[in-house]
Length: 127
Image 1 (cartoon, rainbow, N blue to C red):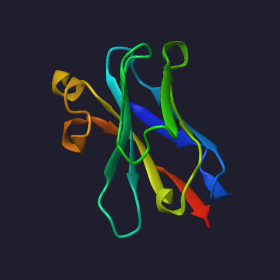
Image 2 (cartoon, rainbow, N blue to C red):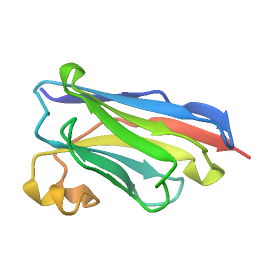
Image 3 (cartoon, helix red, strand yellow):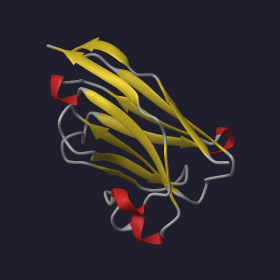
Image 4 (cartoon, one colour):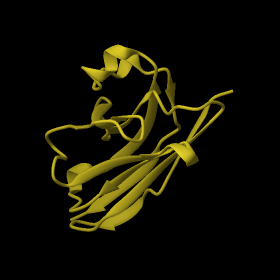
């Protein structure tokens, strides 16, 4: 059974940093697309960043370019999201997702292409 477990969320002030982790179990995801999505209160889930394997090309939403960095560790079957210079609008639940579809390589923002999702971790950024 595949499980994705996020951790690392919390309450921080604007300008602070957080590092989210997503530990995957149940199978090896080294060739999959692994991504992070963000859902602010009252909003739809939005794409944040994705990576194809630990050595794959990272993709970022425009809103986080230069501030967030996604990375993966194949040995630990874990993907990370380093979030710097956090803003109040970054507040929300962050979800980890994993997908097998090759279509994700060209369009990782397509949330409906992902096969597995974590339960989410809350990030709150105060101004």
